[in-house]
Image (cartoon, rainbow, N blue to C red; front, side):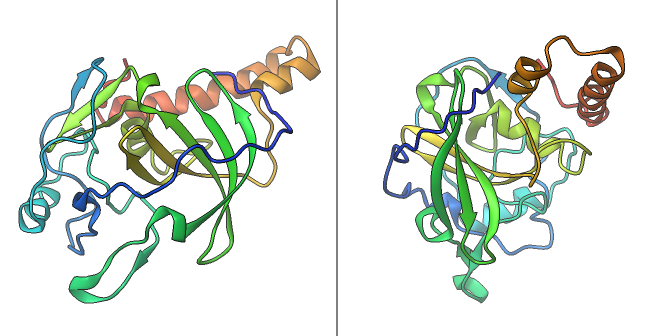
Length: 225
């Protein structure tokens, strides 16, 4: 998706936190990986997340590791979440209390991207808002469904030159993706618009990055299509 940079500031398009209790953080040694349920792809337009399970069941699910499994549960070692509280009261911080949303920095056919700051450490992030009605590809496992974009980014965790998914929040009508934001970057659409036709050396660098990410996902047996 080519995202055009826009200088216009826009208000973040939604309010309150999703009340789903499945967002409670599970402090378990196995929480780094979801259960071994295989990834089930669908193009259906899902409603809000499906069946809920108690923390005990979720902990057992998290301890069943399978690298090719759909990562649909909102916790794991691949995420960098804002966790508050201690002991059994430990939980993920609400989006509104964890991040400050800035100006609109990009918009594409499926979502809008805003500048943001993580309040606990002033880390610069990008905050992507994707309306549920615009999502066509989903991953489903463990009684939950997430956009396939989230699942693929989690599987690509640690891959060089791939933007890191730090966290995500589900709302009744949308998803919020918290992404790493490099200090020096330019959208590929804008880069090509400014430079014109790219020479072979630069094109090779871009394709090498894309193939590296695709190779990582293939090795993890994660469906790309």
